[in-house]
Amino acid sequence: MLRGAKVGLRARFDEDIPVLRTELYDDVVNSSRSEAGPWKPMTPGTRDPRLVVDEKQERSVSFSVVELEGGTLIGSATLWGIDTHNRNAHIGLGLFPAARGKGYGTDVVAVLCHYGFTVRGLRRLQIETLADNAAMLRSAERNGFVREGVLRSSAWVMGEFLDEVLLGLLAQDWEPAPAR
Ligand SMILES: CC(C)(COP(=O)(O)OP(=O)(O)OC[C@H]1O[C@@H](n2cnc3c(N)ncnc32)[C@H](O)[C@@H]1OP(=O)(O)O)[C@@H](O)C(=O)NCCC(=O)NCCS
Image (cartoon, rainbow, N blue to C red; front, top):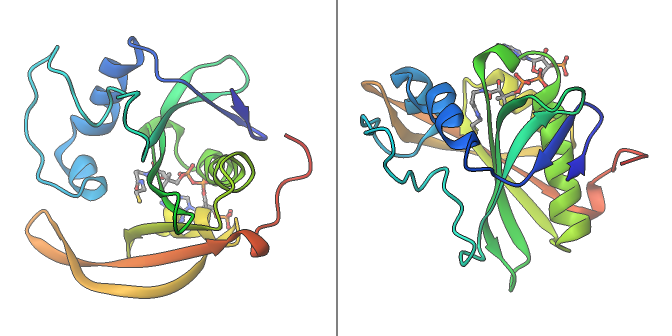
């Protein structure tokens, strides 16, 4: 398990999947804001490609996020689009509504940076998020990500086109937390 100050990033367990699906994807608005595609109902027991880990897929690594104290599941985190030639990747995360606003998101980004830069030897990490997602923007910027551009009207979300912000962090600009 990877450890931050407050959260742990561990492997996905089968029993995490129904909880993650309910907490992250059942709500149409929440799901539409964090998914690139349209919300659709999903029959319980269906293999959900967003959550079931395919070990053969080398371009993506999925983690379940837990509170370090107690080990309670609080969300999901992913390093995706891993490009070993250009040595870059994207990061994504989603926390359960009750776990938001407690500093966990900022800590998850820190742990994903540690994984991307130190464990995987990547040189650049990237985040795309809706321009009105203040908590995600702040979680990224607190870890050194800088805004590199605005993707105008790039996301169709619940009846309107929204801008996305592209943020990037280079390994040489990253300041890791002292102990992990
Ligand atoms: C985005 C998300 C991961 C951020 O995690 P979080 O644990 O809520 O964020 P934190 O508690 O670490 O807060 C980070 C900063 O944002 C601020 N913040 C938190 N919620 C906020 C809100 N609703 N509005 C404005 N600022 C907010 C915090 O005050 C903090 O700022 P500070 O460092 O200056 O104190 C989480 O809110 C979430 O899962 N949201 C839904 C899914 C999502 O949007 N994922 C990202 C898709 S790219």
